[in-house]
Length: 100
Image (tube, rainbow, N blue to C red; front, side, top):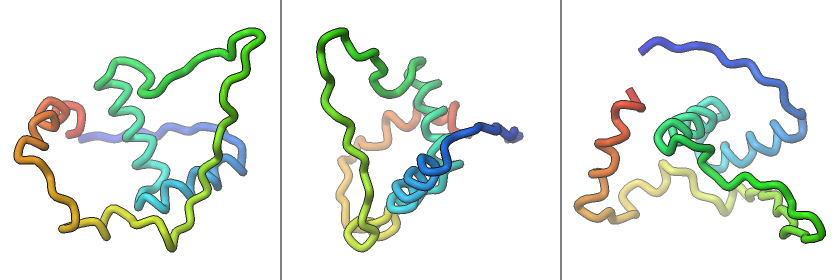
């Protein structure tokens, strides 16, 4: 698989907060962005709701997630502690063409 570089500009504080969230999940920014892109391709859409605030109607304020690494397990620590249904990997077969 060949790779390419994507360069983006973002606010320094946003990048640091995102890194903290991804780190608590056992991810780095590159992996998180690749997850986003793969889901966008799979869903053929932005993989989360995007909307404009309706005139005269307030939306719920955003909650900024600041994880506590001592309380948030990373994926590797969950190995062997989660029981999966026998058919869990079936949808993954459809995604393989986008993953490799």
